[in-house]
Length: 417
Ligand code: EPZ
Figure 1 (cartoon, rainbow, N blue to C red):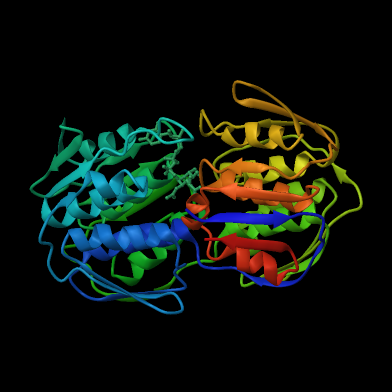
Figure 2 (spheres, rainbow, N blue to C red; figure 1 turned 90 degrees about the vertical axis):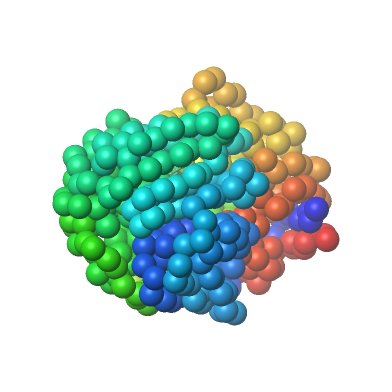
């Protein structure tokens, strides 16, 4: 059980390179199930969740070779099994993304229900309703979804709530369906557009990705492709927050500023100086951080995956900031740990009020989920003395060597194994 030790108080300087996006790589790996030809993905982050997805694909009979430097050779020449087992799905809910491709290609899929997680109940009812509209029979038994369809049929799907992986599952399923599928109230995240770009390279007919209405005309089969996944916009935002809270000036390279408009605008509002280049950001921390309210929303709104990191910054801001979490019902697990460092935060339902600036002191902390753990590491950069963050396996699920990257920027951070 690795831990991370941070001694706070050092401003950051230098450059950091952003890795590929976890949340674009996961659906891209699942899309390789839609063809028996080879697919080569590059810029894939070497993080724990990607390895888990490799094991899920392996359990289905597909090969997934990870090469150093973020290239993955994937090929589902044959599908030997259509079951995504509980033991894998329970460690990573994104495994549910094999449901659409398996059903479309094999006419059958058996996927363990993901169950709840630290940040919320996170049901997949909308995924199942949409696939049922496309002609699948769906049964839930023994904790598994059993889905069957001789061949999926194009349909009109309207999502009651915007869902990222729901949109991705239906987009992939529709690629081999008979006829046209129209997805309304679709998620517009950059990861959706990136998946569509891969699917089109594989020969699919996908239009409107990145807008609330996505159209897919099914094909008999798809082919192979080569595709570089987009940079990780949440990792980028995390480093903007790190610089803002620790002080100093950094350059963030190999990122996609256009993908985090709401984040850049919000941090500027707090006083952070941010200069944008085509694939880089120059970030300078302000002397005084202004407290600003924020509400998490689906893209292009402020991402829920940046809420915890933003909260860490608001503990050092002058005044009171109201944070409203509209996506997940239980995404304040980091609050109690921040309070243990001395932060002044009040939570009522989906709203948290953060008063600052309050001096933080280093402490022994426990990470509970991916973004909460990033928040604790950021808070530790501003805290007096030493902080130890336990259970950093959460962090490793979605950040590539964040401790090394922070050390490269001059922070006093080390991994205790
Ligand atoms: C994706 O999760 C991301 N994960 C999450 O990132 C991210 O927080 C989330 O989108 C929102 O941006 C991946 O892409 C792998 P949703 P997803 O379906 O697709 C409700 C991270 O830190 N809902 O868009 O699972 C749901 O409960 C992770 O990298 C239903 O009610 O999220 C939630 O309240 C954490 N029924 C809301 O919709 C459904 O069938 C949005 O969830 C589906 C969703």
